[in-house]
Length: 324
Image 1 (tube, rainbow, N blue to C red):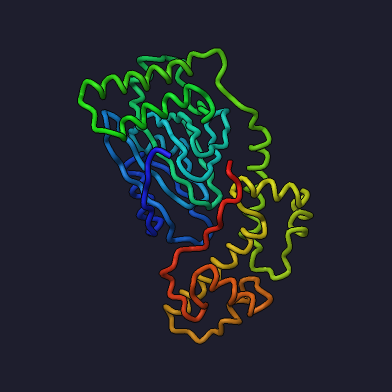
Image 2 (image 1 turned 120 degrees about the horizontal axis):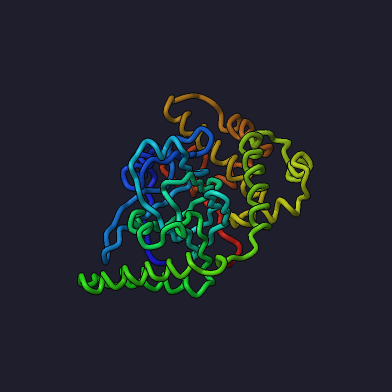
């Protein structure tokens, strides 16, 4: 991890405005019925580089042809995955980014990142597209994937780390910039792009997208089970487990997360309107069939009973169970 970043809860509209002002026109997909999110966008200049810290827990971010025509952003973004995971696609390239992986994105081409509603943080290095074009010509291509295990990626990581260690003088900054351009050139002009087999990752990512959408639409059904979901999606329960493992969670935990999120939303609405709805009614309406279990899991997650909940606590976060 190159940097740290203190993400805060903020309105989705504020995040969209921050992203637009720093990176250009992008469409943010926060997820169903969400107006608040955890994240932020902060620019920073170091050692001659322009960086952007981008953190979010949204479903995805995309840039299409209409966005490209709406701004004059002429950059390439070297994106370092700092936390979480992201499915990136640009042109014919699709990559699953894990912490330490990098990807080169061309702002003049449509692109899409999918985060599945999980917290993800990236460091974006803004590189002038005209400069890259003058150096690399037609070899420049968006969607270039740089796996964290590749030696050149490690060298780029070292260059960026150096820029955060100290505040170099202008001469040193120039050499750091030349080092970064040189390393990118060595990848762009290589005989074949450093790659790993990602077909399985992409297949599981597509299944994950379907499964997340299914749970988002059906989580309030108290009869919903993982075997039933697997049957209706025409996959095995094991395949679902593998798909959700890319988010460091399980189908059961994600289902619980969605039900708790819906319960929080209902409780905040109840507090805002001074309503008289019973806690049990809310529990049953979001898919819990056992009131005592709902109370127990709610308190374990938010350190508050449903009746004491004010809406100030962060949403449920599930721990990552894998090291990868």
